[in-house]
Image (cartoon, rainbow, N blue to C red; front, side, top):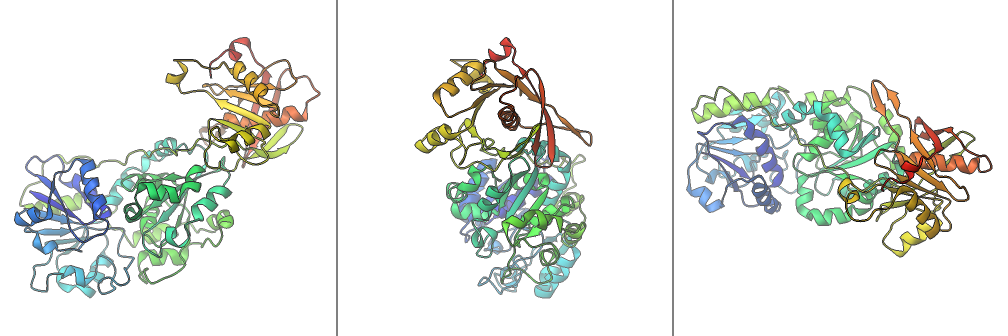
Length: 552
């Protein structure tokens, strides 16, 4: 019988990442218990329930005996649990202390917690660490614990490394496309990014053009537990409404790091996992404090990466990152990369006195993340030329609906309140995407031309109405012209890949081009739509009758 003893969600998630070392063995029974004493414990119980684990109340857990007790934190009365104890990595090394807690040593290495029951209590049977330097640090503060320390690596990192091949599916699940995914990583506590600068996600979301960047936030599980999902989402509402992804604290945070192109971080150790996966840019927003341990891998990383002083300077800070910096910091935090789970498996079975089964279960890969809750923005601003339209799409404001406005003087259309109606009536272009397939095949639906005519009739200030079909073809009606037009953006080839423009962006380019050629009859035309640093050709022609009759 193996007991997994967790004080918080973050400790539980670390334990879950070690379980593949024992999977597939019907000789082993796995039980869970919540170690009392943490303000973040309630969510840990909910997380155990979510994975379907069998939970023992603490008093009952203390009354039984176990062949092995696994814990990812030395805090709490672990000495009351009967059985050989294994302490596993709680995070990426020992980078942070909690002022006012214990002796002020690095969290996870504090002798106050390692010897909580007194120096006569037996030490852990195994203190598993991720790097040889951590054994030396442990020996300096708790020599008896260091005698049982072994370097196994980091089981959580194993899942990120094994999931690197899923980077493209993860980006597809997030809806990233050809954009650059910028992840924000915030630890917990008073010196964290979200406590010191809670408005940074919203400022970045408002600044980053939609067609060039996607934003995601990785918040420490303790922040999710402290506030609750509802309160955290309410506090982040402006950024979430603009399309920012809020990663769930179990597994999804790691999937987002695998998918990201750049990371903005405080002193939390999630950055070291990111650096170990690939050598991509890291930017610091750490402003100093009492929590970061001098000389730790995170301290070394933050001292060498660019610092972001203002949200407006993000591009410059990313360019200033020196390749290799992150990898060097990760090597100081993680040894045996790619072999940690096998090393842990050997140690655990030796403590159990069992021969490992001949066929180990393959490592569980990370799941695909959820897409952002928001749909693309409708605001297009840019300049019109004789042949091209240079467009910039800022993120949408809260309350974005399915019908949106383009070249609108203020913001994006919302379709549920008075402000939405005001914006719709001031829009130069309104467009509608097709309904999902189940909705389109039941009930009543507009035809493409029917909706375009309706929009021009209902909104006298609108010059152009566009219906985007499921195929990506756009059907366009412009006020004062007798015929409907069809347009489609041509894909670009980039390094063996195909990049396509959002049809809504192509609609704005065509809208701008037609206004620049309002006195010219159009048969066919090729319009250049410039989005960020990419240019797409958009073919414009009269629409065929069967195209105007398609459902949207």
